[in-house]
Length: 219
Image (cartoon, rainbow, N blue to C red; front, side, top):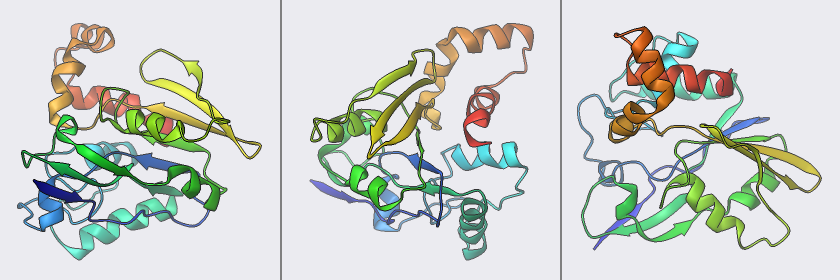
């Protein structure tokens, strides 16, 4: 069985207000067998769309290649905009070596509540995926069960769903965005909101949909 160790520690710049929370990067980032176009950093897969989305929202002119410059560009952006990244899973196991969340077994979760306590400026968790099994919100809810006093309260059940909870007299909001992966494109295509935009503009893409969804929560 393949041990899928997260290759990157949490990256949380000083005074960060927002925290991007996913699950795990593809296994090739653990084994360091990167593909052309990958970036050796969080969400660096050439098949992922998070940095493509942020590149469009903030007009960053990012490089998409395996260079130290590309890594530095991403870190500088996060520092400037006070955004951190800390995925939920520290380590897991897989029978099939692929990047599917459903294939995750025996997940060892990062101590997210402890991390929030150590970073009192954080007030928003941005989940890159919803509550489906082994998604970031799913694992966060599982982690939260250890703390009987902490409960997620619904703010909006419209996609992207939003919740909040209180930690040490501090309100922390969460939002579960549509996953920035190609595998989620089919789900996006079936969404009513996407179909409405597609009908108005035949050139409207699943990437366009995500850019519009993500922008209010990153700005």
